[in-house]
Image (cartoon, rainbow, N blue to C red; front, side, top):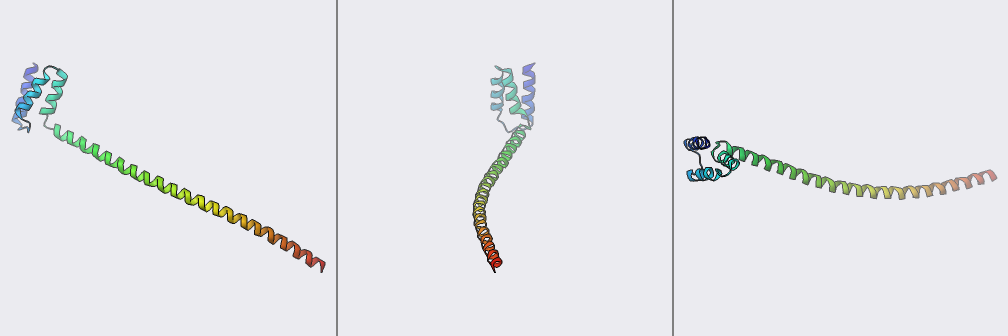
Length: 125
């Protein structure tokens, strides 16, 4: 029964003008008799008309996904660097504004003292 199915598959593959060499198909089939699972895989790989297209499709899909992931990885790296630069800039601006606020507080205190002295002077007149 196994030989009949395998022979039928072999005939179908030859009649469909497979690009595989006949010796390669026979080698795959004969090598697969020792291991039924191996024979099934060899026959499927060697005789399925759509196998190369399916394989190419999956390879193409895997490459496409890999490419998209690489693009996302580089975009995330750029974003990370941009966020670091922005954080540094905000930190610098924050430090600058704190210092400016301290100077303004000092000026306000001086202005308040001056106003106080002027009020006292006006009251004495």
